[in-house]
Length: 113
Length: 115
Image (cartoon, rainbow over all chains, first blue to last red; front, side, top):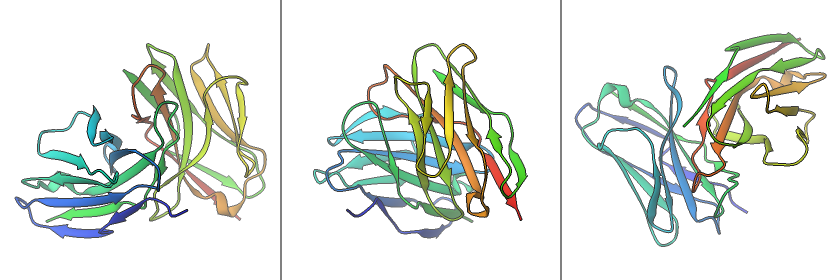
């Protein structure tokens, strides 16, 4: 079974631009979560989508948004990029419910210049 | 709300020596506990988890962790490490009553195994 895939793997953007990252979960998984990883703040939860609905949201500004499609694929969008948005963005998928064994993708490394 | 503290940011150890990576958590509700490992330029891989039952959980590659409710700890141990265990290890918690999948991570511990 294929793992979680994220595209693109690397991205360079300029401050003020917007970016869209994509995540394809493991087949059959309906929950997709996004995390931001930075050296200073560590791993922080962004949001989770389940059956096309946002189920949980972390403490990030409204510039960070996401969505999930009917095939469970998910995208996250960051508008008006800031230098501090440079990070590794990780996507994780899971079957329904709790407890929640999450499977992580390799991440998208975003660099904002 | 939950929080996780990993007491050591780096742990250097010689090959074949034992190691313990410490993790303490704070939560107002019961929690599920996890250890994840991250190798360079990769995502996170689940190492082991505590959901309920026996407080000692083991992974297939020789790691074990013990849930201690009174000390709110979930330390990770391995009796003999290999060079290939060099990686960053993250402890994480999820509230029992949380709907959905939201993990709170500790700051990570970099395990450096020396020959």
